[in-house]
Image 1 (cartoon, rainbow, N blue to C red):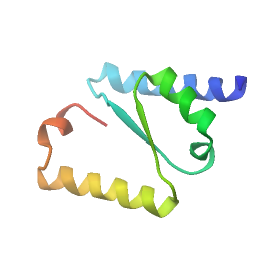
Image 2 (image 1 turned 180 degrees about the vertical axis):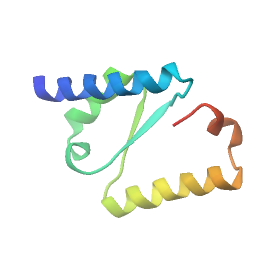
Image 3 (image 1 turned 90 degrees about the horizontal axis):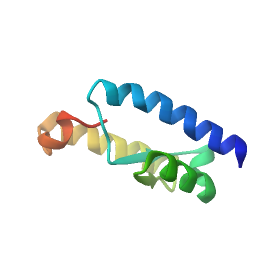
Length: 85
């Protein structure tokens, strides 16, 4: 558990750099490896204080990420794009 918490806080440190640049997120998409472990997802949710989306499979994560990218490119949800990851 201590290792998982350490990784989660290291990720949060990286995210804080983005926040300083004005880039924020209300949810995170996790896939593969540790993303399959419910405890780790909960730790990350607690550390980040936001909702965690976990892909059931690598392909599902790819499609979900691609879909969001297409939404941004097309201007759909433009307000959310302005200050989000």
